[in-house]
Image (tube, rainbow, N blue to C red; front, top):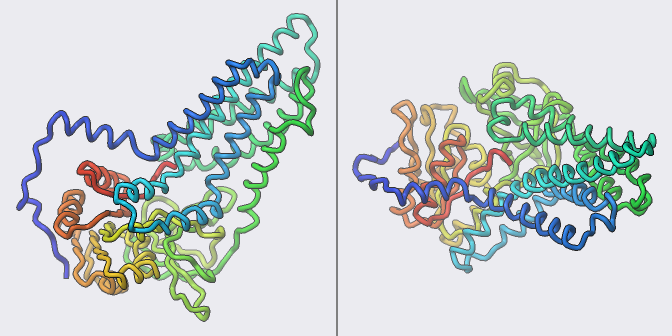
Length: 454
């Protein structure tokens, strides 16, 4: 049932200096990093206007504080599930009659996490500028022995917030985030809450300084109020639900849970300890009928949490609503498509393959192909996956990793060219995802994969 292309049948091009420069550009100048750069550019432009017009003198210390609060609000806002679902649904309606080059750019919208990172770092830089001005203001009054209790409280809260947000940003670095994931989770959550509380105090105390507007007229206060609402909102929508765990293999488990009207191509967050950690998994609706309001996820062993879920699955689990759409929602943007997955990464693709979007694409004569690499694909526990795949692609390319993992980047590129496909979407580990996406884009093709550090 499995088949494999022979990479040795084709010769790979010789790598030249031009190819190396191209690969470096593809790796570093992604849509994700470009959005970070654009966010910085906007903030730099605002800073230049403020400095040129001496607005920081006119507004006292409130200008940089407002800018910091605005960036924090934007960083939280772009991660809201409701906004993601609305914007992704809008993008998914992009007509396929548009030129391919334009659809390729539009489909990169799923890199919205770059805005979150850009705004978060910009808020840190703005606050550093605020602390610089506030410290000078404090030292002037301290030298004249005119530093009041409010000024002492102000300067203490300044450095407390700066410490908190600096820890959050440092541990959010992709390499540190992977190496110290538990520490990242805790600092991002508890450090974020602490930073927001301190910033509330900071906004109140700083309003007592000369030249600052009264508290009710401080825009930073209202931005903080909106940010606080956005942080509290998800906690009002978590639910504890019963689950049924069905072993798929020694390294995978299928978890079924109640969820009415689960949307396709979406990701839901799960937890055993809601205050401490959350884990995102692509969800697959069991059936579109109201009589069967269930969905399931396929969990593969990748860490302590997933290992515990596989070996000793609980009877209940916490989940957070609503489910958020993922990049596979953009499949309808293309006239033909290759879907690539490794191991349990097939889970997100199952949601797409069962979706009405794929059914419409097939009705319209659009080609959808599947490539999957997994250990023992013909085993009985993978039969339900095989059935779903072959219902869409009767002749998928399925590799058995027991025979050795093939060069999936090369195989995906070859299959794309051989079948004349417009785009490739891949769900795998970071290394394979990057190799396939960059390999396809190196030949000006369209390729998309999940972003792991957004």
